[in-house]
Image 1 (cartoon, rainbow, N blue to C red):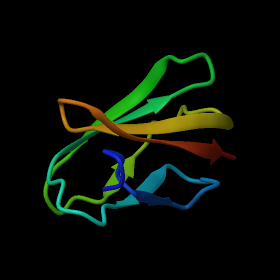
Image 2 (cartoon, one colour):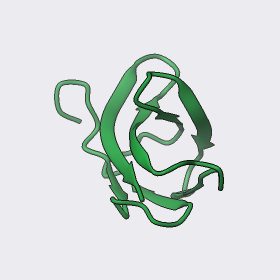
Image 3 (cartoon, rainbow, N blue to C red):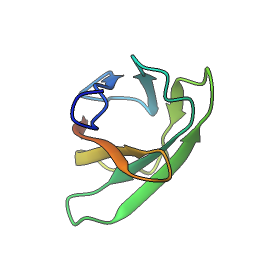
Image 4 (cartoon, rainbow, N blue to C red):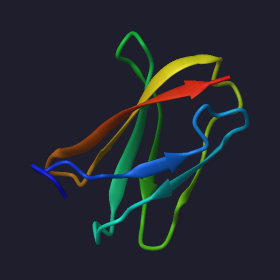
Length: 85
């Protein structure tokens, strides 16, 4: 963690299907993952527990630019851009 922000990796990016893999390099065991559209609206959300690394996005997620955010229930730990093809 650097300045309270996780150095989280997710792939593939750009995303063509609906499965996003998330790698947590530190021991943050439970994370809330949110998918935010360009208007700032939450379009999908997930709760990742110990060992779970795969997020299955809605099939209806349109092509475009989104932000993937994650928090531990206390603070936002990361915000990264994702492109859906």
